[in-house]
Length: 250
Image (tube, rainbow, N blue to C red; front, side, top):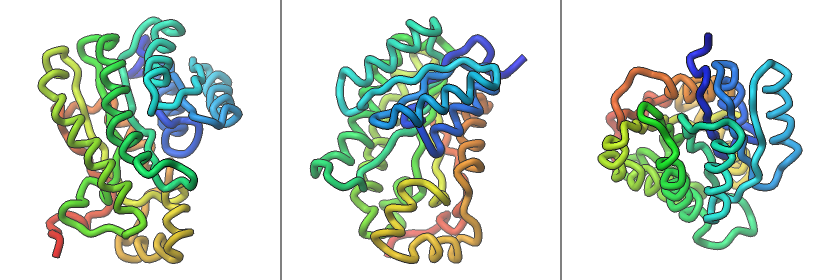
């Protein structure tokens, strides 16, 4: 018996990286998983195939979370394919990609998170959980300076976290809990790669400063733990980056 038997999870941004690993872990715990992608269908289908090969249940859904159609497609797929929605992992984020409109980071990292949650909540049962994935660079952006290349993304993700926390009373009325997972820079993610490209040596410098950076697999395991962890709604789980604590911006 898995911890998530007979439950359904949506993991946004799960065709690769942290989201893909979280999806696989949750499926291994018994959850049926809705794997979300924006453009990379083959990657998402591979995640689904891996889950199914291991005896799990999953479905891939192409959905742009910055559109109303996208968030409703994800929510409705959970119900149509698996009959319930019990877990929502808000992992999708971005803003450093080239060719996007100027306000894309805010659209994805704040507005889309709220819209996805609002689409999911009417379908979620009492006892369901929402997990929002963020970074220390975003969570602590008001007190710890971050790299200039990342600051617009960090501030948009912080705005997303603040907006989600404002909904805690509404979630409590429905018996739904929200947990935030904040991690230091993660080795091997798209964001880390883009940061290192725009600021060569950034990853190596952060690794030296922190002493250790988590891998995608290590961080995903910590995110997945928070789906069933016995913690209060509104709890923040910090992963790595101990040097952030107690710092203030100069």
